[in-house]
Image (cartoon, rainbow, N blue to C red; front, top):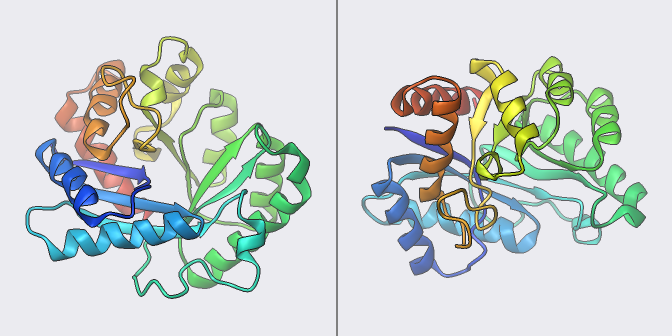
Amino acid sequence: MRLFDTHCHFETGEADEIAAQLIRAKAAGVEKILAVGGGGTLNRSAALAAATAREREGMPKVLVAVGFDRDHVAESRGAAADDGLGVALSAWGEIGLDYHYSPETRREQTELFAAQLEEARRRDLPVIVHTREAADDTLAILREVPSRGVIHCFTGSPAEAKTYLDLGFYISISGIVTFRAADNVRETALAVPDDRLLVETDSPFLAPVPMRGKPNEPAFVVHTCEFLAKMRGMSPDDFAELTFANAERMLS
């Protein structure tokens, strides 16, 4: 089985702890990982994960995405997300809107999101988009600033997914799909076309069944892959290969 975790965060700044996660991921069949930032600390740890994978043997290949998400308006002023990192980028993100926790900063979030999309366009990079309780504004801005990439950790309806698919985006499913109350995510995961579906951990959050209650990590993407494969009537190996190819195409 060849797996691609298309979205994980390394919150630790410790190379040895990152290396331990990467070794476990490799043992689980994870060949590639997209380490994702979103603010200064996460941007730096994503770059550290890539360096750790390069410098040590037996590691998955770690690709890097950096950006400023909805919580980093002040931090983004006068600085680029990759300043001082010295790392090649595969994507820009995560970026986007979250009105669940911070509805009072709606104007600042939308301005930052549009600016980050423009930065990704300037660099010709796909974007990793976060949206929570902000679908209307997310879609409006994506229509205003045409972009390519993925809507990560998707939890919306099949109809909402179709609006993003129509804009050319991929849809990424996390371990939420394995949760008992996530019928809407399972419905959407069945509706997304084969060539537009990705899998992710969003670690260290949202550990899938049967790892609920533990800090999530890239190795656990195998459980989400196996769950989705069974749902869609495919073998785990075939589903893993399908989503691996989709991830490589999305990042190309």
